[in-house]
Length: 458
Picture (tube, rainbow, N blue to C red):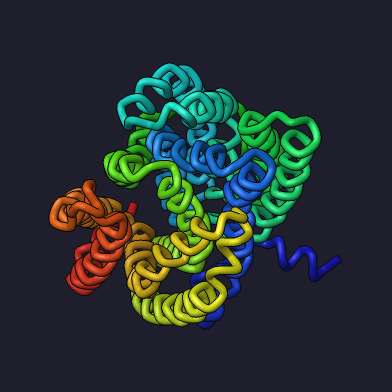
């Protein structure tokens, strides 16, 4: 019983060995992020095997639009995590309680907005992207179900972010594992047994996310030793809502711009036909797993930096940044090597079409070295965000996405046009992504060493 209590107790990162604290905090998140990636992966595997390659393409084509229209949740989640970690590190109970209460109310408002607005604009956006007629209806119905049930997605991501800010990554992991199992079971039930197709996949995801959100809320309601969760704290306060927005807005804007760039590139992807769209979906699903260590260490370093900045332990912040980023790079090298070695087998999970397997493996090979670069970007950006500087990572993301990735993608496609490839080489899409990742790592390292992030504490 004592061991269970220790596992689920909030982690104080202001004391002890930095790398040990970071690794122990990252491990549950890494498992959790892998489990969350299973949501989309299982969706793709189920529709690819039980419905067909076009259904697989439909689920993937809906992704960039889904990401664009949930940027509000991203912003609130980032702002909440930074404020919670800093107030927790500073031991300010009243401010912590107000921050958490205001986050819950903001999440409810954002969920209602997305539910209505996103459902109305889904079809026009799909048409704007020249989504093939063979998959556009599937894309639309998939998106609408997810948007109508978006409250579960919103509350899980934001409440689990609050738990991590408090140093409790284990609870968020446990609840995510529960919902992942529910999602897999419902996917198989709705699609394989009941023949609901793409709609069944979306419905399974909505139900599973709602369960994980409810479990997170129940956990927070029991953490009364650290803060109070009463009705009076749910009332929006200008100081706290404005600070949440101020800290979270750059990350929300970054996600919005990144998603818009993905939509622009998706238009180029769509021009290469259904086969390449399906290959892109497979690569992005495997890419999600390859990125997991980077995202997990980045989030851990955000919490680590936030708590230590709150406690005014800047010496520990820099030491943890070096150690955490180095470990993330090592893990990324190992994982990327495994993906390259077993690439064909991985791609074969999604489809039985040999040409699609070969095309997906070829595209995945282009991105390989980029994952190591992303370990640097995510790790050091996480430190800057945790310290309260969310603007610098935003500008870096905008520069690498808008000024580098999109022009490189379309430029390479234009330069490689030929009789055999009238629209240009398909590799242009992935080479542009690799270039943006490499440049992002260089620019992020420069601004981290510059050190202006040290003056941004809440």
